[in-house]
Length: 63
Image 1: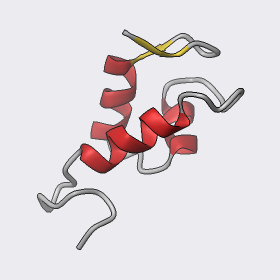
Image 2 (image 1 turned 120 degrees about the horizontal axis):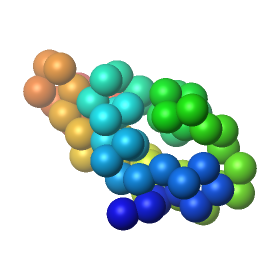
Image 3 (image 1 turned 45 degrees about the horizontal axis):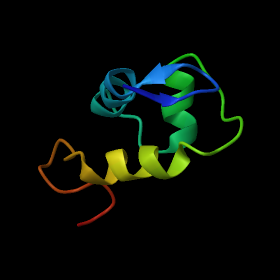
Image 4 (image 1 turned 180 degrees about the vertical axis):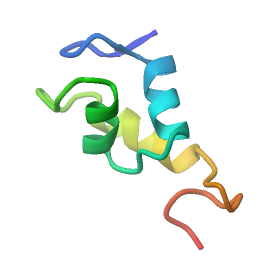
């Protein structure tokens, strides 16, 4: 499913960037070869980041 219309980025592309360590929306856009434009997808990207466990097994941003 396309999440970012401006950059034509799918949920799979975003999830892959996050799995590889992107922890800020700017990093996710960059890892996918895009840039932040209109910002509508930023909330979805932040949610994806927060819901993806880090290597230590905790939720991103939480101890």
